[in-house]
Image (cartoon, rainbow, N blue to C red; front, top):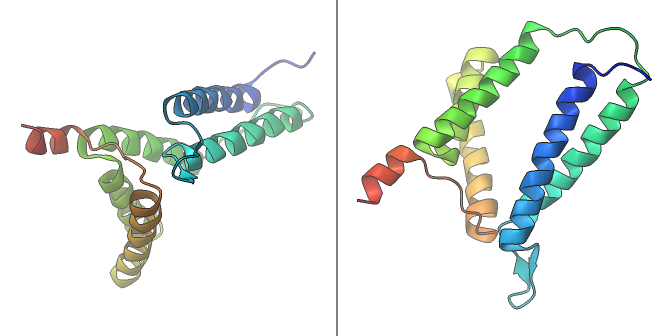
Length: 153
């Protein structure tokens, strides 16, 4: 049997996390509201979790055929750091502001995009996220400590 390495362990951890989120979301919200004939707040996250689990399992199976140790570059660690920063900012300022800040900072600092293009892209993404997820699907995004401290006195 081939020795397990990061090529297999990381996707298995991600698949396990997705499984927990999938089960929690379906148990708490369900998938589809039969009375209203509309999706529940867990509709899109459930689809994404199922897809991620499938991708992770495919990745593990295909990685078993590869030889040698995995090699990682600086850019891959930048993505991990950015993800951790988004999670930390979500805890403090909420998910939507954290993701908006991520888009702006990534486009400016990593991609070196001009401000005009950054603002146009940000406006389009914000309109899509708010229109689809907040208004249409009714997804409740985490608000963060600062928001809760100000508005839940």
